Image (cartoon, rainbow, N blue to C red):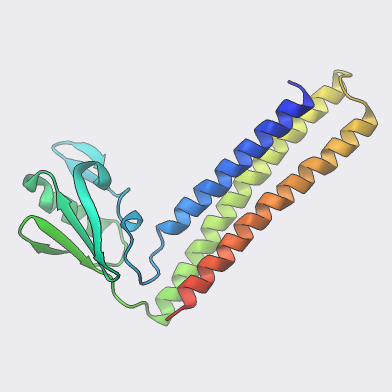
Length: 186
């Protein structure tokens, strides 16, 4: 592996870590209905686990409601159980084959709690980025050890790895700040 490949892999992996963190942020509910809040909940369906989005249509008819319409009416009870067990803080209302989730207003305490959860998600993203940085540094050290790059090149590449790492960590911080602002809106 040469230096260009190391940097290409570093950028791609760090971008994936940021994207993953952003997807995690979408699962936090900010008082607005979003299908992403429930679509990845696992539901027991006839003995096997399936994601909710694989077994139903999930819509948001208005800003305060998530509507779930299972394709098989026989799994409505299982979906309700999974929603309750998922701890999203929303009580499902069953109306025949439809399941409605009315999104409650967030209390100040719940907003602080969600802020802490968002911080945890951001920290996980940063840990992933630091791990990717470590792998890139190990690859550069191996190139230096093998004599493929000089000491000066190694130092320059080491600084570049840190610069790119800082850039991706800053992206996560900016997204966290935006999420916190969103959570604080009443």
